[in-house]
Length: 203
Ligand SMILES: [Fe+2]
Image 1 (tube, rainbow, N blue to C red):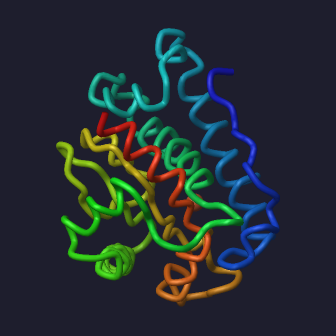
Image 2 (tube, rainbow, N blue to C red; image 1 turned 180 degrees about the vertical axis):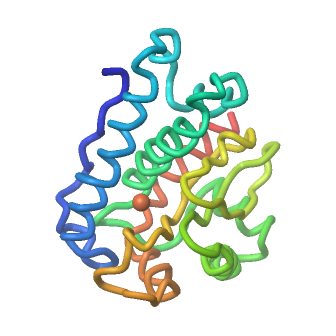
């Protein structure tokens, strides 16, 4: 099939500073897997689309046949969003961004603490399921939020990281306390990976 579930880049129990093992297992092995399976099913009769990358499909979403477009938005977005989510966390994560990304954060938002506050505000402003994002938009850092599995790539933006605020991402440990989950998420954020993506996107 065209798309495959990527392996988690670390053991499921290694992000306990923020996310428990069972949540990681269900989130990756069931939720993300379902997005991949449903995306492949939606593209089963579309051999030309199967050869595209997930980023291409989302960037060109308006060219996808209308009969399957919403399925690609939901499941292709789900696949892209979660693939990014796993790589932007690390058992050795936390701390603060460095290098060019840190400079851009300071010049755009004032300081790192303000970035964290704004990501939390975006996470809490999202009613129901969705994502709180740091993206590059026309080369500039921007904080935004999207509903369901809508990807910023569909809006021509480059997501650097997104905090998944679907209840499936946090409910077992945090129940309704989304703000506590977002606060803990900074303990596993992988600034090295995000900084590398930033450098690539800017070059
Ligand atoms: Fe999720």
